[in-house]
Each structure stands twice: as structure tokens, then as C-alpha cells.
Length: 234
Image (cartoon, rainbow, N blue to C red):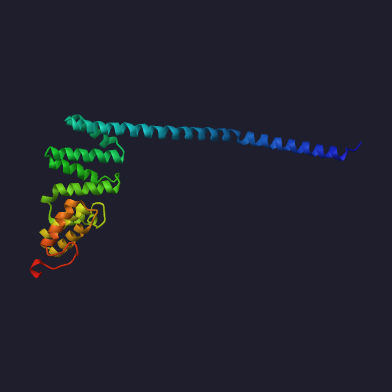
């Protein structure tokens, strides 16, 4: 007896569902283990990422406490203990903590009148490619300030001229040393222009601006107007 149309539709649907189950079973047999492995790998990587983030936070917290402990030791006169903490941060600290440790050690060396040791520390910071450029630039300025009296004027200019830029973050310190070096080289016009620019720059510390204005005037330049000749020509 022939099947009724509704029975044919039911039959086709059952066959289609059976074929779909067979395909899924075949896919599972072929790729199921890979799928499980992929899920496990994803969970492992996720867990590792969470652990690493937590570890970084814990490490940063420990380094911060170590740096604060060094500062406390310095304030209470325990410089040897402070030095040990700072040495550890220089060796194992991240860029920010390493820079802070190097600068603090350099300042302590200056306080102890060990200018050679201080220069070595600032030179180390200036040459550390792992530190952000602003830290390295500041270390270069600190190094040059220590070595200034023993450097040839042109060496000072060559080292600091890239930082002696109006509006730059280190224009005050770098610009003043470069301008004074121009004076030593008997280049009054270059010195006067730079002193005048320093005196006009509101971002430069007041003490440097005041000295720069006086130096510009002594070289015959009105720091307010930025013009003028030599004093003899006035």
C-alpha cells in the first residue's frame, strides 16, 4: 500500500535528521579531539593571562614598596640599607623603578661628594635604551652638569643642543649650559640670542629666566624685545 503524502514527508524528514546526525557524528569522530584540545588551550592561555596580570600587579606593588623603603632609609640616614634596595631595583626593576633608583643613587653620590660615581650612574641611565627618552634626556643633563667644568665648550654644545629647544621640557637647564658655552667660545651673538629666548620662555624656571635676562642684557640684547646690538653700540 502506498504511503500517504504526509507519511512521505515524515519519512524524508526522519532520513534527513538521521543523515545530519551521521554527519555530526563523523565530524566529532574526526575533529572532536582537536576541539577539546582547542578549548583546553584557550582556558590555559586565559588562566595564564590572568595569572600574569596578577603577578605583574603584585611585582609592581613589591617594587613600589621597595623604593619607598629606600626613601625611608635615606631619610633616616640608613644609606647602606637604601643602597641595597636601590641596587636590587636597578638590576630587576621595570623602567620607571630602574630610573628612579639610578637617579636616587646618583643624588646620594653627589651628596657624598662622589662626583665620579654620580657621573657614572647618570651616564648609565642616559645610555639605557630600555628607559623612556625623557628619563635619558634628564640623565644627560644631570651628567653634563656634573662634568661641565671639565668638558670642552663645544662638547657641551654638541651634547645638549638637541635639548636646548625653546618650549622643550629641558630648555631651561640645557639652554643655559649651551649659552654659557657659546660665551666661552667667544660667540656672543649666539649666546645672547639663546639667553634672550630663555628669559622670555615662561616655562623656564624663574631663577634661570632671571640669570638669562641679566646675561642677555650684558651682551647687549633686550630680552623683552629680543633685539639690540652690543652695549658699546647702544
